[in-house]
Image 1 (cartoon, rainbow, N blue to C red):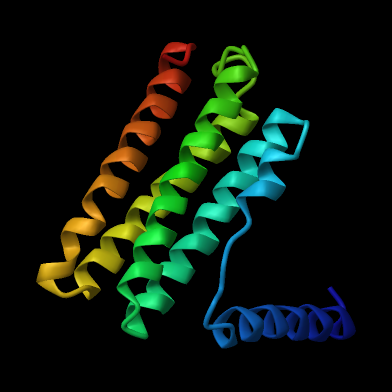
Image 2: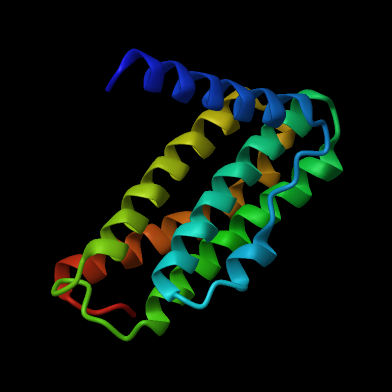
Length: 154
């Protein structure tokens, strides 16, 4: 890459990051993912939405807004379930065409790691609101991994 492209990419990333961090009402948009007709892209958009919702949950928690944090956590769960359902609706063998399935498995694994870190950063009394989300994401991750290994989603 040229220096000009690197600078442009750096500025673009800085602007996006600044907008995400500056917006106290950061709200991910699951409706955009639901509106996508391509099931693979819908899955990716839903998982991207889950990552944004996690950022929103963390930001709301840091600001002391537990209700907004709970709402963002429920959006994480809905997003991951939408991603899995979109992949299941493709009716494809994950072993024969692993592209969308593997990327979803990697994204859910990363999301689980980030949820664990968020849980460790939370106060002990607030952690129970995150447990159902972690369990749901773990179940989806396990189904995706098993589907990739066995060749079918359950």
